[in-house]
Length: 127
Image 1 (cartoon, rainbow, N blue to C red):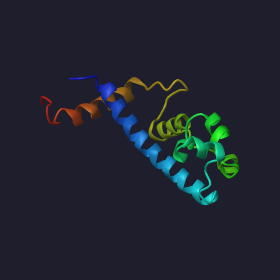
Image 2 (spheres, rainbow, N blue to C red; image 1 turned 180 degrees about the vertical axis):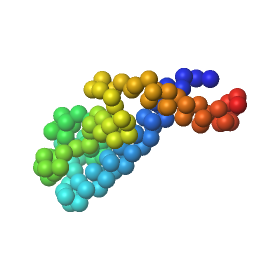
Image 3 (tube, rainbow, N blue to C red; image 1 turned 90 degrees about the horizontal axis):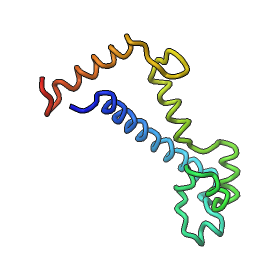
Image 4 (cartoon, rainbow, N blue to C red; image 1 turned 90 degrees about the vertical axis):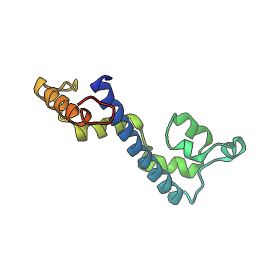
């Protein structure tokens, strides 16, 4: 049996990441409408930059390769940030007891009990 904490965290991270990809896709579609699909400047087109890659990652890529329309769009609505999304996603699903994110022993016991109930009957697990 692996670590129940790691298995839970990995599953949660995967769910969060899948939801973030939906946010990035929605941001791309909104930018497409706002810019009339003008994502790249001449330098970006010449370099063969994938316009989707400008939705996340270093802002230096946007500065180097994005059209003026896309830069203006980002100035008004922002860009998806995995770090910010992850914090907000976690905060919406967790009752933190303090700023460090520590759970009380009772909260850990509840979580561990729920995890054990879902995994002890799973295929490949001993009951």
